[in-house]
Length: 111
Length: 113
Image 1 (cartoon, rainbow over the protein chains, first blue to last red):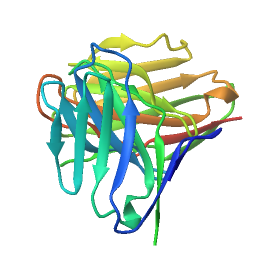
Image 2 (image 1 turned 180 degrees about the vertical axis):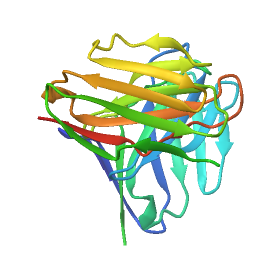
Image 3 (image 1 turned 90 degrees about the vertical axis):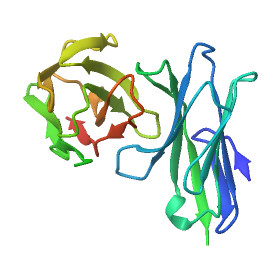
Image 4 (image 1 turned 45 degrees about the vertical axis):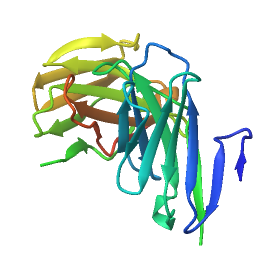
């Protein structure tokens, strides 16, 4: 399940299940959104992006959904694997300009 | 070449030292960014260079001095840092106005004693 405590929110899922990581953004002027994965000791790794003229975009095993009405972004990971364990950040901004990162969510995959 | 390299990987420096961080890319991307990331926190933007010109400075203290000598290289010069400047320093590249994705380097982990 999902929990929020003193540290980053953590999502624990069973290997093979689907994962959904959520992000709320505040700037209604943002028109570009990115999901990053960051493993321990590494820089953020681009996963998938979406422009505000789209509601959904699919990649390999990942789907990003954008709900502009409620300023909500989600990342769906199908058939979650142990290698998906990491911290996931959403980022928002004007396209081609600076990005503002969300707080991050820890994904833990149990074998 | 889809790689962004950063050197050094780790750096320990005293508060009176002068050091430099280096970021290099050969992907032709013309926007290069410096971010600072503290433990368990998201990256925070410091500087943006667009076509080798400084376009954004997020009110970063002058003890951090960026430099972009050419389209492949981005430096961050450090002088008289404080212990609270200890963090992971990340370089990011992209090309504004295109569908290119953004690439982060592996970062330099800096410890200021």
